[in-house]
Image (cartoon, rainbow, N blue to C red; front, side, top):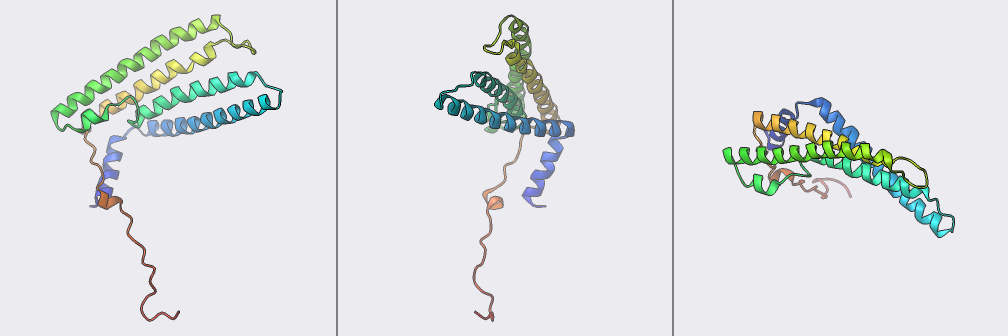
Length: 194
């Protein structure tokens, strides 16, 4: 069995929660839309200010899209082990020491997720007393994504803990030979007419 096939099988073994795969895909698409909308609103803000007719509400839209993209992106990055994760320490270890370090790291991430949920919810409730100008929208609309992000980060971290404790946290990396693309022969076959 090729190393690439082994990696695919191991990835499938570690990602048993297929509903979370779909959730991750949806969140990734949402992040893409949020980033596109952010870029579009910044561009529109620049253009309207340059022509002398600024749309002041664009700043509200821009800040909302930016904040939502950051917190939803943090949740997706947690699922992919790209964020809030200390890989340099754990990847240098194997066996029981790695298991302990991986569990401690994820316990810290769970603590961060709890803080996001708890304090994000408190800020959300307090946000109904302040309003954004010029629309008059409660600032709670910005804070709503913080506890949601904390819940998602916690969910993805629990998934990683369960999979890691059951199957181990070691993930073999593909060798450079498996990643190399073979050269394409550009010479004409023997006996071919030019």
